[in-house]
Length: 204
Image (cartoon, rainbow, N blue to C red; front, side, top):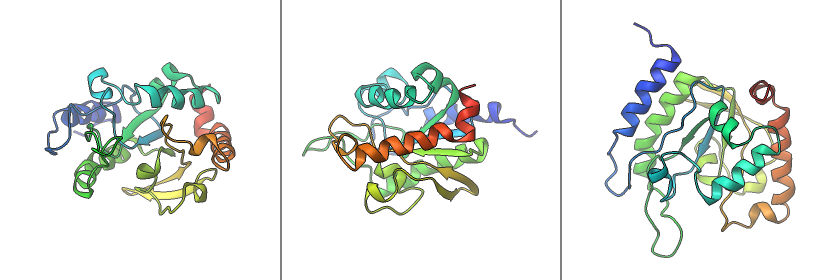
């Protein structure tokens, strides 16, 4: 029997929430509440609050992120309903002794990528929104954020060709999106998202 996307995603999320492959990661894995969507947002990894609250971008960075999207037509509630939210890694990586959150290892990213590949296969998204440099580099080469943000890119991942509009990470520790050229490039990216036909369909 061939699963329709909704059934496949329900099973997928159940299997993902049971995953305990990475010993240094702190679970449970974080999944989104949206059903099938042609818009896929990919973050980096949850912070320490998200596993407890059970949803991605549930803390400080999320407040900034959802302000960006509210400015182009989708408030937080609507965004969570309309957009499938994934991440490079789904569990909290732990704290870096030098400050901030630990960057996931290559092995952890590789293991978790199987979940993202399945989601792309099920959803066949048309619009990809990678948030933060770690997420962006899963889909395209990037040296500087200013080289890729503010543009639409054609990318192919897991056999699916998509249009990607990268965004900076909305961390409160980052000054990139609050100073130039980041401030202008962020607005250019949000305008491109707002004008994208798939986004327009979501806000109707």
